Image (cartoon, rainbow, N blue to C red; front, side, top):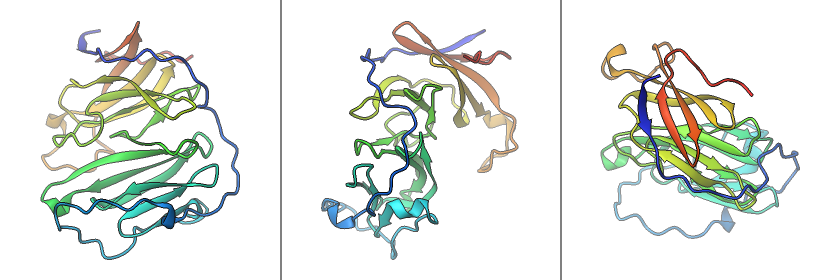
Length: 244
């Protein structure tokens, strides 16, 4: 296997529980009145004229929205709030790990003259909101999750491959590999075990310039493995993470 990328930046964290399934419990609807006042934007380029569209019920019942904020009901009945003023489009709302986490993708900043995107993960147990860049994928135990993301704008908290650990106080970053090969549509495909993650991406040379839909594009495979106190990303060379 030819090694492509190495990482440092790993925090050794004591294991705290809390990544498993969470039972669904009926809670009050999110209350926008509980959201804090937002600091005015330096730029006046804010053009959304209506509240952010919400998904259909039952998922929509745990959310409320305005032109500026998305409110999400916590598992304890409180409200978590996300500033969505610079997000032109929110999509793919889904619950993960039972109903503890709500995640969604977004595109935005067009009003500022450029485009960027990312993904938000809201921990409904703690109220923590994490920008993961790519779709977060949980490990078999639910104790960790990972994402892969690469963008010229580098808006997300990571611009590469990232791993977070689930704790009772919310997700905590464990490691980041920020020197992935420059490719398109990086993503986490699956976890093989708690210490091995299957990744893939699309080569620039394999698709026409300006391609946005990569569903049928050939993908190049990579493997991220934990090695001691760090993680390392290599070309898969036909070998994926073993299950278990």
